[in-house]
Structure formats: structure tokens, C-alpha cells
Length: 571
Image 1 (cartoon, one colour):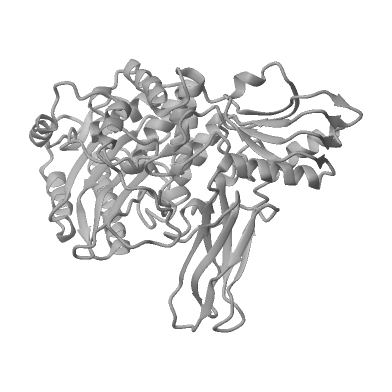
Image 2 (cartoon, rainbow, N blue to C red):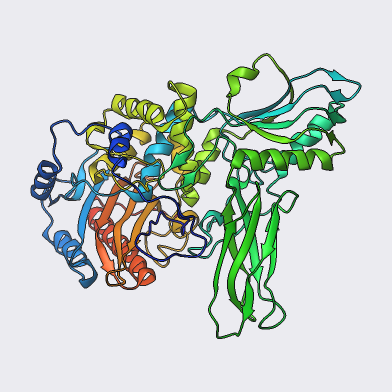
């Protein structure tokens, strides 16, 4: 749907932003989808009841159980800043080891979680699939291999691996950049170093090494593992995922105003075809660049303007049909390896079970699933988080869709004692219009994950304040630098009535690591959900929102350390 900056963002009632994919607006039929995809039924617990209960549960508690008026006044002053005159807060901070409440303000209030939803989709998938689960992407032949010729098709059977790209490195890990390319067009973004067709090329080399010199049939990509292929937030998706099913464009100004912009792109292999209509304008002109799909499986046009002398700009555009585009790319890399292809690139949707009796001629085995979770949480990857519940449904449920996947994830957390019936989730990424949960639920989830054997992988996957991921630029100069491991969440709309932005959600949830040699268990769990913040300046508002979250965490942590005598070691 929309691609955004290092956090989930949604925009409505506006003309467009750079490189926005336009999907059909939601209709009343979405209410039926909500019923099907809700994480847990509300039963008899109404939102009004939860809101009233949350209001009376606002409290500040010291580790000894006594109210702390100074802390309450500090946090209240933050919440009363002018920016938050129409906002509502849901906050809960607890000790990780004991579960004792350190601070609470409306912890049961249902609010939009935005990208903190990824704690649910990633945590659930990690627990169900296992930290050591590996994707196995097979290529099979449907005909005999005689004297180097395949008398049939080559079929790449999609496994749901979201990282068939340059991310896998020689150490068995997945690399990432803090400003992921999938957000290009809404904020600054960087490309992951390397060739996005790295895995496809390795597969093609392995096929050639088996003695294949000719394919008399078609080159097929079967993405039938997923029975659902569209999400209200990320748009179309697939069980095949080459370079996040994106083409990356780096756009630079031409030699002088009036000339065409200079554009490079990746993957740059045929069949990717690009027409350049973007123009260079005067230095004082406007930078406004976007890319559109045209006819064909991988055809694009670059449009807009870029000022002379300006720095290169990254933009992206999705493959309109990921499976068919992947088939074309696969055929092209096979040809690069000297394999003659007589048939055509094709898409199939039968699913992996159909190919069990066919000979595998090449296989790619991914790094452990814990690495995929790490990429998803570090950069807040919307597409990957959307895929995970569908993947769980395909491998452990009745079918490859969100209903089946979230059913299994709901069972997983319910067995852990979480109150899943008060949670509604429509999207694995957190972009669903109906997504709602509480600060209490997120803290309960964090405490539950901390009790599991795979906690070290979950903890390692979270962004580190001031160091990496979506909070690499936060907590600078703060006593909490390097101590916060947390997932961000941002959900923002722009209205046309008065040109204001409304942050429906600015969320942050995770852990504060205050451990010392003498106090090895000093860690806090927290969730801060801020809803309905209005501002004419989107960029300034998000900074002020995050500053408020930082200030609350510093105030609570300072109060807690005084009462416990905790003096954390340097991170």
C-alpha cells in the first residue's frame, strides 16, 4: 500500500507521496474481514468497559508498593505538553524478573499498536517455527535429464523465504541497513550492499553444475504455498520474495537543468525495463520523484524532477506480479550460466506438495529463522511481518493465509497465559485499520518471551537504542543509550480538511537492560502507546513524540534505580 520510513505509516485523504502504490480504498466488506482476522474475539468485554477500567488503574508504584508522587508528577508533565492536548497515553513499566509494576497509566486501554504488532507476528512465528527452522527453496525438473537436456520444465518452488536476496552472508547471518530500502519514497533509505540476485545466481550455478545445458520446457515459479496474496497495508505479496519483490532505483541529476535524470537500478538484468521521464531542474527546484509500473512483468517508468547538483535519491517500485517477475529473472540468470531455455517464464500456484516426487536439481537453504526475525524487527519490515502469519498458517495450520496463521499464533500466546481475547489484529505488520491492543498485553508478551529458551534470539532481534535498527538515531546522549531494546511503531494519516497530520499511534515497547555484576537480573519491561497526536509538521511531531517516550523512560528508570540501588554497568 504505502512504503514508509523505518516505522509503519499510513496516509489517507492526500494527493500522493513519492512512490505510493495506489490500492482500492477499503469498503464496508472490510468489516467481514475484520471478523475473520481478529486475533481474539472481544466476547462480552466492550471497549468502553476496558477504557473505564484503564482510567481507574492509572497508578505509579515503587518497587516497595508505595505510590511515588514525584514520578507521577514528572510523567504527568510530559503528557501535558502542548503537542498532546488531544492525545491519550497507555503506559506500563514492570520489573522483568518479578512482574511488579513500576509505573502504569491506563495500561488496559485499547490503542493502535502500529509496528509493535511485529512483536506478535515475529514472536509467535519464532516460537512456532523454531529458532533453527530453515527455508528450503527447491528447483525440480518435470522431465528426464538426457545428455544435458531437461525434457520438461524447471520449477522453482517458493518456500516463503523473505530473504532471497543479497542479505545472506558467508557467516550464515542476514545483513541489514538501518534505513531499509523498502521505505524509500517516504524518508531517506539505503540499499543493502551486494547483488539482489545473489541467491538466484547461486541456484543457477548449481543447476549448471549438475550438467544441465538446456531446458526444453518452461521456467516456472510456483508460489502456491500462500493461499492469500493481498494485504490492506502492504498490498500484494507472494511466497516468492526476490529483493523484497522490489526494484531499487538510484536517481541522480543530469548534467544541467532540462536534461533527463540519470538512473541506475537493481536488479539490472533483463527483463527489467526502465523508461526515464524524470527531468533535472534548477538548483532551487523541487525534488519530487516516483516510479510507476508499466506493461510487462518488470517494466517501469521513472517520473518527476530532481534539482541540479543534488545528491542521489533512492526510490523503489514493486513487481506487479512477483512470481512471474521471478520466473523471468530466473530464466535470465540461467541463460547467463550458459543454459539454453526454449520455453517461456511462467507462474504456477499448485504449491509444494505437488512436487514431492520430482527430482530436486538445486536447493537453497536459508540461515536460521531467528535471522529472518532479526531483520524484520531491526528494520521494521512490513512485507516480512505480513508473510510470517501466512507462513505459520501454511506450515502449521490448515492453509496459507492469515486466519489460519493467526489462529496458531493466538493458541501459542494463549498457552503462555496471555489475554488474547482483548486483542484485534488484521495485519501482521501493524498497518490494519482495526488493529488494537493494550500496553498490558505487550508487556505480558515481552515477559512471556523472556521466559522462553529462545529469548536470546528474540532479544538480539530487537533494535538497540542509539546503535542500530529503527532506534539507531534515538537515545543519543541519554543514560539509556545502548540499554533499550525495543520495537517502534508509527501510524500517521494526513487529512485534506486542514492539512494536518494525525499520529494515530506512536508506540514503543521492549526492555531496559540495567543489569550489573552484583544485580544480574535488573531489567524492566515497558510499553508506551501514544494515540491521536495532531500536528501540521509531520517530521517535527515524530521527534517530539519519541522525545516524550525517551523522557518517560528516563524518569521511570531513574526513580526505579533510586529505590532499588541499581547502578548499571556500561553497555
